[in-house]
Image 1 (spheres, rainbow, N blue to C red):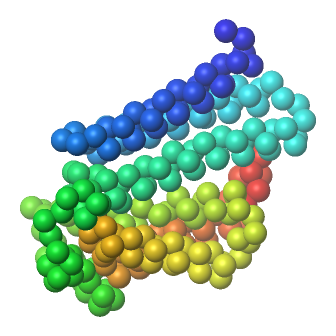
Image 2: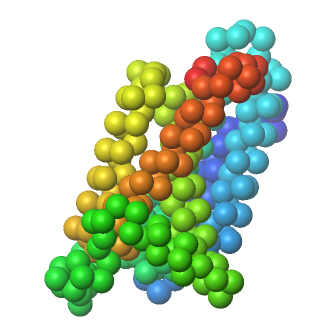
Image 3: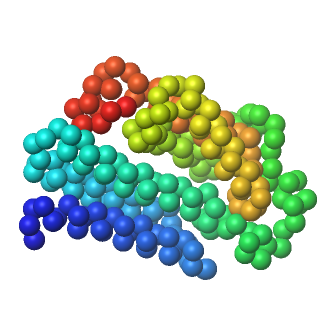
Amino acid sequence: MTRKLLPYVLYAFCFLLLLFIIIIDVLPAIILPTTIRLAFSALTLLFVLAATIINLSCLKNEEEKEKTVKLSTWILFLFYLTNLILLLFFDRSYGRMATPILNSTMDYGTYYGWRTNLIPFKSIIEQFENFSISNARDFIVNILGNLAAFAPMGLFVPILFQRINNLLRFIVLIISMTVFVELMQFITMAGSADIDDVILNSVGAIIIYVTIQIKFVKGVFCKLHLKV
């Protein structure tokens, strides 16, 4: 196997992993544990990182290096976005399965009463008030998980979509995206439709976006052949 071919073999493994995750999530009665999903994500990151390093070692032109790194970033973004969609709408370990589409027995009145919150900070305050060691997992999922879910958008968007080149545009984009997700969760009754999810998802993404705009961090990205 030549050195130039190896990166594309590694990229192909990434797509096979992604295809496997999609098949497992869509098949009925099979639950993909979060630990396995995270392991696959780590493996994909390692494959893409290795492929990028090998490619860069073969290139001398700065423009070609930038294109190579951007290709790897697109692959990681596709993997992240697909996993995010599966997690939000099809992950049975969190009770999500686009229920009206798949023979739900729950009506919208019941769903609205049990799984919908339109009062800002209500769920967040309840999570902190009810926190204990016994329900630490729920706290991590609902607070830290929601902060982390859209956080990578704060990295991918400025790298891949350079028209979103200021904080205001990014805030408008990320709030629009999270509101759309919550609306779709309400329509499909997958998970819960919660205004606090919009707040936490948006805050997580904005923190990352602001962080990578720091001069020192920008300098690090430049050395990695990435423009943010």
